[in-house]
Image 1 (cartoon, one colour):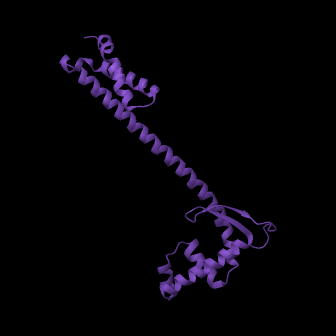
Image 2 (spheres, rainbow, N blue to C red; image 1 turned 135 degrees about the vertical axis):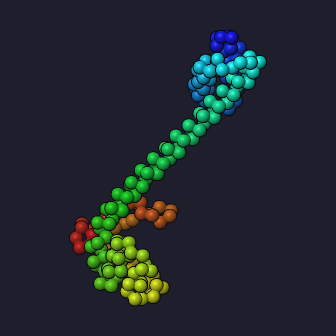
Image 3 (cartoon, rainbow, N blue to C red; image 1 turned 120 degrees about the horizontal axis):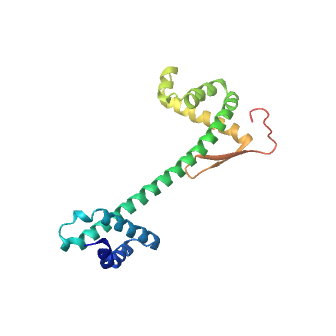
Length: 184
């Protein structure tokens, strides 16, 4: 049996099958063409012509499954790229703010400055820092919160911050009248 004969007989029913499961007509045409190519390349493997119809529909079904898997993978990839771009933008803001933090920290008391430098900039765990300074962990946590509030107050004198719903920094702008003098 030739591929032309097979295709003339089953093309419309294969198209109907694919159309039920794929809404875009251009995608249906592409899938139908893939089914034709796969059936042409594997025609010699079919030994029983009575099973030809089920064999063709199996090819169509597998082709459609591959299509949806590929589409899902592409969508996941696009979402990951968007997420990566958002992270890069956030990283840029944090880099800018990190350069800006040091002068503000120096504007705090000596104890607050040392505490925030160790915990926030150097990344020392609060529990470890409490042990190093021989103070209770709960006391240190309170001091960290107080120091952060003091730092936040200094920042708010110079800048307006925009935060997202989760409280993450999205952007900042200098307030009018602050031209970079002092800590700004």
